[in-house]
Image (cartoon, rainbow, N blue to C red; front, side, top):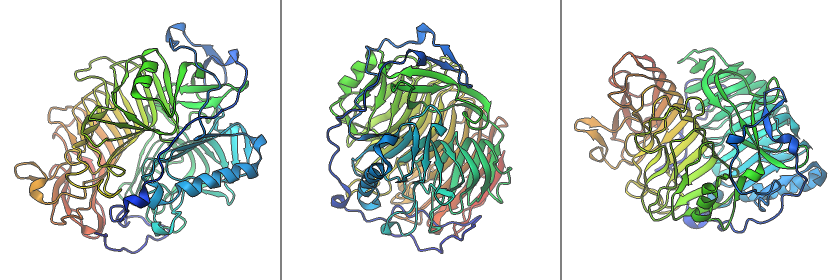
Length: 633
C-alpha cells in the first residue's frame, strides 16, 4: 500500500514533513539481485618500511613510543597489502580524467535504488594524499575516504555528492542508505556540497570548504543522518531532513529543523530551542573515541590510526592539530577478502591479528570470536557478514578496547539468537579507561533475503560506546524477504552493561521492544525510530494484557539512573491502520531516569501512538505533526 501523497516540503520547513517513502516500493527480485561479488585480487602498490611511524601522536604531530605490552602477536603481514580490485586506490599521478572515468563507472553500477539497494556489490574508493579535480557521486555500498593522516592531506576540488539520483526516487532521499565519506577535504564546485542521505551513511572527518546541504536538490523528503569530527566553514543546512545528529564538529552555522535535530560538542550549533525549532544541543560529548582509519605514511606504507579516548569534548579532533592517538602498522592486520571463511578469520584473530575487512559478502558457518583486548576490526566498502545455519555472527569477550568499525551484519535465513554480542552475559569488568567502541556498524533483518535474528546487538560489557548504528528490520526489499512472519526479529538493541553510551542510535521496525536498556547509568544522545509497519492486527502486537504494542525504547523497571536527549519515534501501520501503540517510551518513574526532548509522529496519520512517555504526552495527530515532551519526569 502506498502512503497518501503529501505536499512537498518548502525550502525552509520547520515542523512538517511527509512520511518516509520506503515501504511502498514494489521491487521485484529479478530487478534487485545483481551478480554476486567475486574475486578480490589486485595490488595496492609496494613501498619500503617506515620505522619512524610506529608511535602515538600527542595531537600536535609529535610521536611517543607504543608500549611493547600493547603490541599484537600477529604473524607479520604486509605493510603494502593486496586489497583487491574492489578497493580502488587513487593517486594524483593517475590523472583526473582516468579517475573520473572509474568513479563514473562505479556510480552507474551502484546508483539505482531499484537495482543496487539489495545487490551484493561493494566498493571502496581511497584517495592517496594530493589534490583531485573530480566529481564523486556516491552510490550504494560505497565508501569514499582519504588516505592522509589528516583530512586536509587529500583535497577534492569538486564534489562528493549524494542526491535523489534516480527517477524512481521521485525527488526523495529516504532510501539513500549504506554509503559513507571520510577523512578528506572538499572544495565544492558551486560553493555547496550535497550529502542528502538517509540511515547508515556517515560523514566523518571531512573539511568542507564551503556550505553543506543535507537535503535533495529537489527539496524532497530525506531521513538521515550522522556527522562527526567534521568542519564546515560555511553553513550546514538540513531543510527537509526529518532528523539529524551532529557530534564533535565545527560549523560556520546551522539552518533547519523539521522534527529532531541534535548536536553534542559542536561549535556553531544552534542553542536548545526544542520543540520550536526542534533543536537539542549539548555543549560537549560526555565520552567519545573517534573511528580508526587507514592512511599512508611518508614512505608509502599503509597504517591504521586509532584515536584516543576523550571526555567532555567538543570540536573536530583535528581542528587544532593532528588527532591524538596511536598508529599501528598494517603488519598487525590480517586483510579479509574473497575466499576467506569464518575459519580463516577466526584463525587470524586467534593468532593476535587485527582485521582489515575489504568489500564483500562473507557467509559465516561459525561465530567470529574476538577474545584479545584492543583488537581492531576495520571495514571499508560495507563488508557484510551473513551468519548461516543459525549461528551468531560475532561475539566479543569482556575485554578492554575492542574497536569495531564499518561493518554490516545481515541476518541469515535460519534464526540467529544475536548478530553481535559484546561481552558474555553477566560481564562485570570496568572498561571506563579503555572501552569497546561500536562505530558505523549496521544490522539488517530481511531486505535481500528472509533474514531472522532474535536480537541484533546485545551489549553486556560495561562502558561500551555505541557511536552510530542503524539496526533495521526491513520494511521493503526483494520478493519474499519481508513480512510479519518472514523477517522476524524481536529486539534491535539490548543493553545489559552499566554506563553504556549510545550516540546516533537508529533502530527501526523490530517486533517487540526495539531498544531494551537494563543497565544502570546508561545515556543516549539522539534516537530515531519507526515502529514496525506490519502488525497484522492489535492482538498480534501486545506487550502485555491491556497494553497495545511495544515501546520503541524501554528502560527496565529496576533501573535507577538513565538519561536520554533528542528522541523521536514514528508510526506507520500500513498493513492495518487500526493498530495502536500505547506509548513510544517506557521507563520507571524515578528522579534518576530522565528524558529530554522526545516526540512521536504518525506518518500520514496511518495508525496512532497514544502517549509519548509512559502516560505522558498527547496522542499523535493525523496530519504528520509531532507530539512533544520537553522533559520527563
